[in-house]
Image (spheres, rainbow, N blue to C red):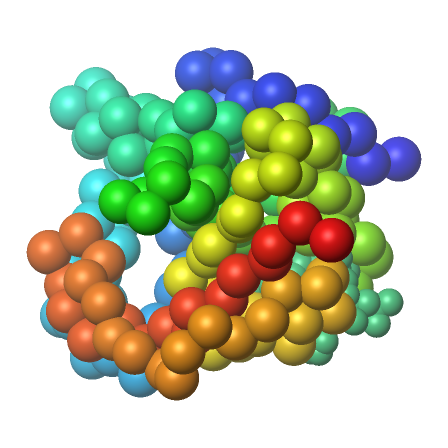
Length: 168
Ligand SMILES: CC(C)(COP(=O)(O)OP(=O)(O)OC[C@H]1O[C@@H](n2cnc3c(N)ncnc32)[C@H](O)[C@@H]1OP(=O)(O)O)[C@@H](O)C(=O)NCCC(=O)NCCS
């Protein structure tokens, strides 16, 4: 059974490992090994027990709303979001579901719970990875511009598709 709940700081190490492997496998295939390390930022140290690395990962996970999906004791999904952009729109900041659990409705559950927690009438925006575009379209998001590139930590050139969902 999958449970969606709020993230706690004690989840940080497991969430960090989930992000590191999912981001590397699905989103950073275009990058060299060196570029990938830069694009991963603190998550490149997800396997490290060094307290400084752990702290950097916990800090990178902070967001107004952080939800995890859990199967038994294993974290299999994470969504961060809730900051406002300069136009006052609510940002869905990141979303990852473990590769072994794709296409089981976990991403949809995380986004639905996130949307439920957003203020009534919120316009929600996300910088969708190219991999996730069909997912966001299936959930009622629409492309708001063409594909662009952005920074990811100190790395540059990450392609993304801006998407948006306005209240019905
Ligand atoms: C994008 C992601 C979060 C989707 O999570 P998920 O739990 O597999 O998604 P769901 O099972 O809830 O999918 C809901 C619907 O979205 C669509 N969808 C999801 N993944 C899809 C894919 N790879 N190709 C086409 N459609 C897809 C389908 O319509 C799906 O419904 P269906 O399975 O009944 O056909 C997951 O694939 C992931 O973590 N990808 C790698 C990291 C990433 O790119 N994250 C996005 C950051 S912005």
